[in-house]
Length: 259
Length: 189
Image (spheres, chains in turn green, blue):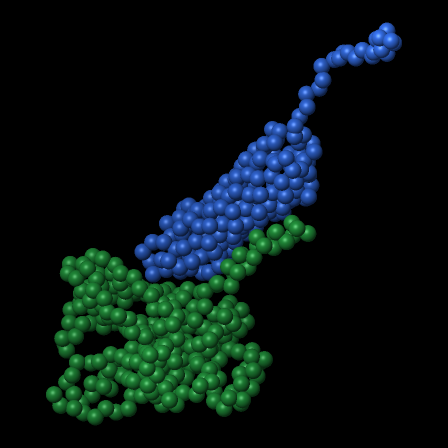
């Protein structure tokens, strides 16, 4: 009996270890690369790629649960929820140039209701004026200087994605002013989130798009880590693919200004 | 009076050398079902050696002594590692689990013994991070190998301690190898 108890004690860390089982996804190929040469508007070159996370459809029982929850709350309850799907992104940026440079990374994406693209938004903001485009990503990364020939690494953490997922749902379903919620950290200044119900069930991102820009020749390689609490990612089984059709977020028309 | 006492005296005489006393007597050590708990480290070699750092390991064995020199045992070992290198995955944690059926040969010298063991089984990785590094083919794969160690039996008939090293081949991790170096406490029922 003591031996069995001892064995159980020894195997407990293994059982705990099984709980931490994230799934990793490589960035699409080719990896993001820029020459550093400014474009026609004298802006650093920008490139973008992304990935869709493939989830399974809910089972009949799970769908009934979602329907019941939707009826009880009075608003749509997403299948892919922020509380169950935790996303992290790690990146390496390598400066392959002979001069130091600064890079910019902005992360956009889509949940099952709304897709956000900072390039579309920047175009809308720029319409009617000659200002340089303003990019407001869902999850911004602080620009960094990379010395020539060096590599820097970084992580966009789960709480950064949590913030972006809240903001995306707020502007997509709850008519929040997009620039207010995206620029402000909701935990510091929840401006614009007044319409979001307190008991909202937030959707997680199902698509992740990475925008990369630099003023020197650089490459950006990244990977996405997903912790899938409820085993909703699609496996090689008989499950069918969940295929949401999120609406592209279009910012309200901006008043033309002259400078 | 004294002649009476002298007459009652009994003489004793040693007629042969006493047999050597073996202490402790290995025959009195418990044999049969045993369990072991072990702590140590696991290091990878080969393709995985470039990207997986050595890590802490904890494991257990359950076995049975068929004879004093031969035993069969089931071995379970888990270890935790971090990814190294200059990929975006660097710093991510990875756990490995290995379950192996083993045979064990023992040569005993009083309280001490040396042993050799080997077997085959399955290894499993907690995540697909090595897949994204193009090292791993499947998260579950065949493993085989062996090693040996040194055992010291306490004066208790049940307990012994020892150190061991085992070297295993991991087929689905691009034919990498791992070295397990552990110290253990054994209890024989």
